Length: 117
Image 1 (cartoon, rainbow, N blue to C red):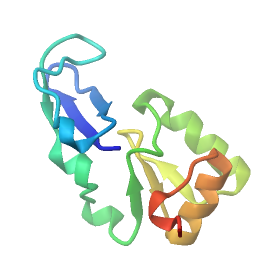
Image 2 (cartoon, rainbow, N blue to C red):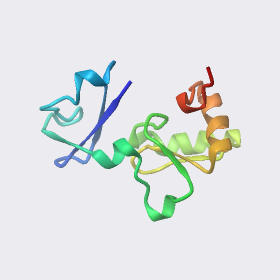
Image 3 (cartoon, one colour):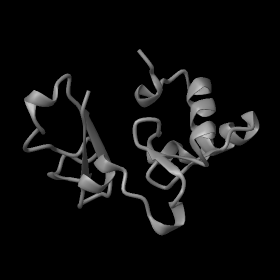
Image 4 (cartoon, rainbow, N blue to C red):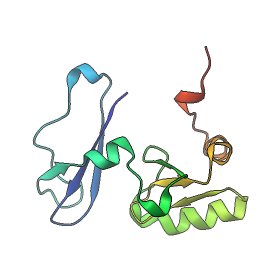
């Protein structure tokens, strides 16, 4: 299921839209969920481009939280002893693959790349 990411220039809020099929294509004319203004597509978030500070780490938008929830999510992850942090955008940043799988299990999420048929 494709995830399309958008960013509002007016208020800085990210918006994600899930589609059941890639055939439907990216939505057009997306409005910000927070302020209602036009949101532009954010290709960097879609492909998971990482900053130099995050190189070697695994960044996941799908396992993330809303930006205003990042502080609490970091507190809870630390209390559980998980090697994950949530950046200012709310994206989950995992220390490595093992840490990612462990944290996803606690979150009751599955990594589709790890599923073996």
